[in-house]
Image (tube, rainbow over all chains, first blue to last red; front, side, top):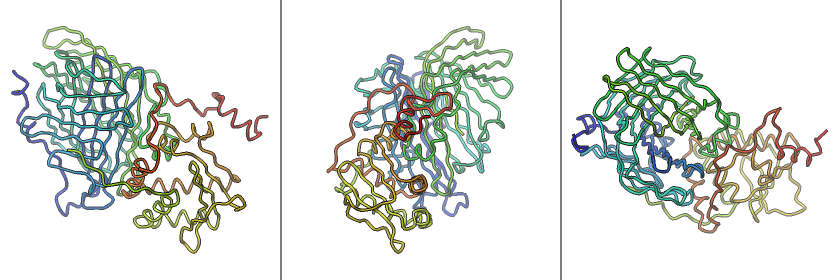
Length: 342
Length: 182
């Protein structure tokens, strides 16, 4: 199949989910568009995110946009913007701030992202095209005081330009991951999540894992794992997935926004594992992933409607994997992002 | 699909401080009340690069006074624009800039604690007051002030780590400066 024919019907219908008027849960509204970029030529990993927090008609409600690239040998470049929702440009499936914007084009499923942060050594203008089907989890998963839903496109190819730390990244071999989360919860609720995406250069596989947890990650929902090889997709869940961690990362090199980092000095050294091993096995297919983190960054989210904070700890690094899918054995390696949120 | 920013005015340090309190008062009056309760009648000298003002509350209102060498204050905070930008953009942690002297705070222990608590109230309120976030952006883009300097490569963790078994040179220098090394 050609890339243009791949997006499923759901890929065309994904839009932001603002609350209806008079929705009693509107204050807990959250919505975000997320794009990870994996530049296999340089080992650079990008984290792009735009998000809405709080009832859109409440003057306290905020829009946030972050663009961070980890460039080997340089470190993190990019930054984060926060503004009132009224000062952002919010479309059917797009959120634009002054320095970062992401839009989903419903006509072909492409994701468009722009970044202009010259003072933070990052500029980008890219288009990500689905190279596999989308996964649309419309179900409202219990999450903190509310719920969360998830739409994701594990595999995308890229075109455009990215200049990070003074060097142009090669989009020809880069890959991407996109997701859209929405729901109702307050930062500071008793919530967290574990999530990761492992992306090999095309035509290699993309592997995504995730689960929701409580804040201290002692009570957790079942793991979900999807392995997308382009032509084949396998799901593992619950007992079919095991995740083990070892080692401890040094403190995050960047914490944003800086004002909240200053407010939360006690959280500057979260206990983040350096090594993560993920095994998926349902008795027929088997996947074994080994990830080693090389850097981390912490995004601190403040709830605009009531006092509460969340900490999104992002680790970037490399992975290797052994797969046995449908009787075919293969090996893969690439770049990954693994999140620990509390 | 970018948002074009409105023109950013030139502002003095005193104008920024006044706007911080005014905008917090407009949307989080309890926050300002907490700051007033914390500082009482105390006055502090705030210095940024070559600007200095003295701030205090009088009759529940923020008052800015002209700085002078003979003005008696209860506390002082001194830093520079690049340090503020580095903190805002997450390139430096408060502990780091205190240890290397880029942020200097003077006063007795109680007054310093009250200054930091007031700043915490201000930052906490800023998370729910978009006007304060906008002010941070204005400060970054202020056309009458220097642009942010490029940040050095930093692919290693923040150098200052506070641990009983891991006291680094910066911490030892700070303790020595305060005559606290046994």
